[in-house]
Image 1 (cartoon, one colour):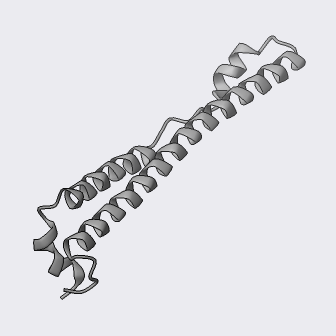
Image 2: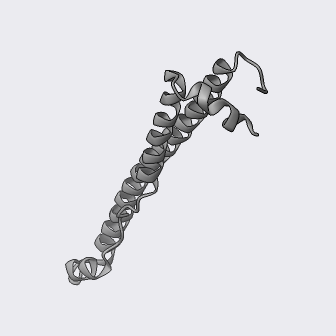
Length: 114
């Protein structure tokens, strides 16, 4: 019998053991939120072309550069937010694992085997 099977009865009623899976659920939600597809900025070439048909080449190049800079800023913000969510999910998962192991060890009096 494994550690989980022998400790289940002893730890299932302990609060620390019950908090661990709850934190794991929070980790799963954060991970799912981080990996949900987002709408990234794209260059709308047709609209840019129509707006600059009569503009000079220099004006068109400047507008294109400004548009690309704005797109990079928006994408960087989205990636930074996703990174925060992934870090939070990993932190919650590590905390959940620590709580479950602590609950099991506490219930078993610190012994590794029943």
